[in-house]
Figure (cartoon, one colour):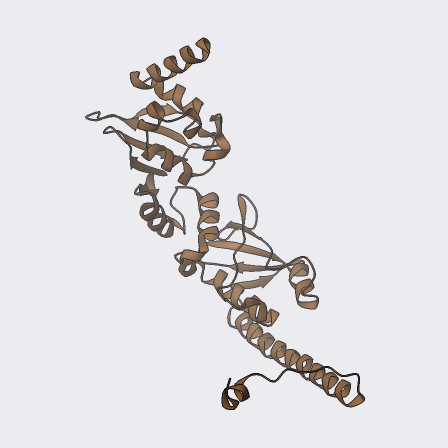
Length: 295
């Protein structure tokens, strides 16, 4: 290595117990702490500016900060925010899940959403910068919901509003139709999707007495819908199909998957329900039972 290139290398620091070296390192430490305090004050000023610009959308109750988004209402426990600002090591890393209720409501149906600000270097930012970004994201949830990274926000809106007409309907329509090739009919609280073998499926969450989804089908050239499942929460493996997206994925490959794939690829309860209306599925169940009896 020549002398010029050697000079480009970083100089290696050699620690020393000397008073001069220790004094220098202490001054550097103090300088970095002072700089972090300055950065925190600046970020706090930006946070207060956001709060003061939105007095009707960022409000306080006894123990919470309440963000009134365009799609929903978000409740953030004040103590959890303050504890993280006071001590970044408290309670793990990142922001906690935020209680989410329907727009304009604090009670009633609720879910939670855990989203993080879109910064690659978020761990290097002052706490108030992160909080300011989070507040702005919740205030503009109707814009952020379309971004690829915010799947948790989309799923929270789906759990909160279902398939019905809501402040989130437009975002849900874009997401469901681009992800599953289904058609969302929010005015009917339903979604429809093509299956295999000329079938078409319909799911709805309009019945308040049903915990899951109600499912109908139309065979090829069939004009009226046939109800096949009253409540999808009764599926034997219902935890595999506890949301609309999972059900739509199953239906898009049905009835083929019920006839040719392993039972666990669909659901035995669903197979039994469809078998009453489709002989090939009934034959599949009968063959499976015969094989089990012979083994």
